[in-house]
Amino acid sequence: MATPITVEQSRAIPIARQQAFDVTLPIPLTAIFSRRYALLPPIKQVRGQDGIWSRVGQSRTVVTTDGGTMRELLTDVDAPHSFSYRLSDITGPMRPLVDSIDGTWEFVPHGTGTMITWRWTLHSRALGALVMPLITSMWRGYARQALELLSAQLLMPEPTEHTPG
Image (cartoon, rainbow, N blue to C red; front, top):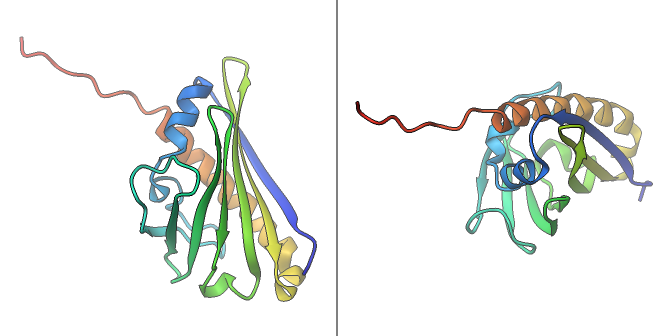
């Protein structure tokens, strides 16, 4: 098996770390992974999730618009610092390229807000090792888009109640 490759993308968001963590961990994947980037597809749906995504040991199946699927297992939750997961049982176009992926989201105070970093460690198959530079380049663009969409979600104004008057 090829040497694992780690890629990451970060974005500073003017929001408290606890709030950033509390919104990001359970956010619906389709809310932040709704756009294609090069060959990396959006997430179409999530199946088999039991309750709010928050407990180590939970698993779900992520379905992409290109017909691929992957099993996601929540492996660590260290509020409000980080959470980690493992993607395995990958099917579809990525199957010949990637065996599994270890993902982590980190939340670090940064000025008056939070620096959010999303990191992937890709465990490629033999064929995947040949195209890993292309995959990691596309992933950085995909991650940049996802962090932009996450930022928009985090900075969305809270709904206000209107009192008839």
